[in-house]
Amino acid sequence: MHLAAAPHREPRDPAVSLDNHLVRSVRAPAPFMKWAGGKARLIPQIEPYLPAGPLRYGEAFLGGGALFFHLAGEGRLESALLTDLSTDVYNTHRCVRDEPAELIAQLRTYESEYLAGDADERAAYFYWMRSRHPAETPMSDVERAARMLFLNRTCFNGLWRENSKGHFNAPHGRYAQPNIAQAERIAAASQALQQATLVQTDFRAWPQLVAEHGLDFVYLDPPYQPVSATSSFNAYSGGGFSARAQRELNDVLGELDALGVRWVLSNSDCAFTRELYQQWNIHTIYAARQVNSKADRRGDVAEVVVTNRRPGLRW
Ligand SMILES: C[S@@+](CC[C@H](N)C(=O)[O-])C[C@H]1O[C@@H](n2cnc3c(N)ncnc32)[C@H](O)[C@@H]1O
Image (cartoon, rainbow, N blue to C red; front, side, top):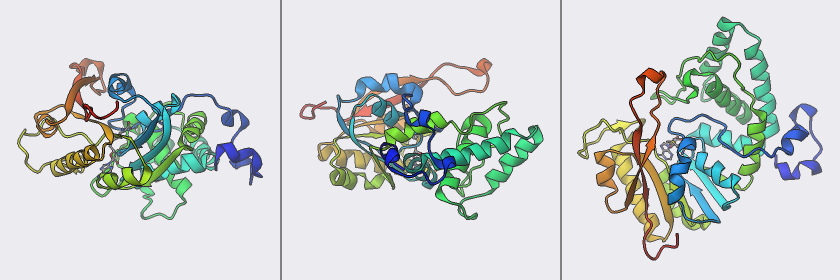
């Protein structure tokens, strides 16, 4: 459903039309999922390395889409292509863009069923929802997206985490009053996504995609290279994204550069990434360490922001 076209359509059912105050929402768009490695809090530090807009923008590892929503909210995008390998990331963004009212209605159902229970009943509801894996349980795209958002809002630490089989496996979180439907946030995100093309694909497709979509800037935020690993280029993996994948991504950066496309990449700051990106510009930024207890805080963690800014590329 396109929000701009909503007044011209007969609502199929009052339960699935967006409330008027949501359609008029002037709330700034923001990620609607809490995401491991999400960049929302780092944007002020990434911002100085971004080219001036308007941008024909690409984002190759969408996740929660923090930078896209930031740039869209500031009106700095002429167009956008957003991709991720994950079916859930793709499907949830597509449903937010195209079926926000249906999605909010489904989330409100889950929210009222969950909040009606006592602590044990809520936990049982969470684990029932978690056990309904989309590959094994028939469900619509909207149900699948609502399941993802429900689990993201009610799990421990609010982070999407999958095991090696691709099954979500974070435990229950026990928040007193989680905002599961987050209708205003979904409505604002839906408006921002109207200008975006969404594709489920691997990062290796990007040299072809920039040409097909006429993009002039790409942001790449791959799963972090683990900092504790040795600095040698051995094959080790982190979050399913191996050192070999990091090197193949660096080859893609070279191809984008040869095509005259500007790009910015984020990664962890370690010997491996410093060596891998040595031909590019490497800048250091600092992220607050994610800890459960303030007593554990041991200072901030360095990350790198890498760019291909150079003479001959308008920035
Ligand atoms: C660090 S997260 C991106 C976070 C995002 N920038 C944000 O602010 O929320 C990395 C993303 O890369 C995706 N991913 C992992 N392997 C991939 C691959 N081979 N190709 C494309 N995307 C991949 C994951 O599904 C995940 O959403």
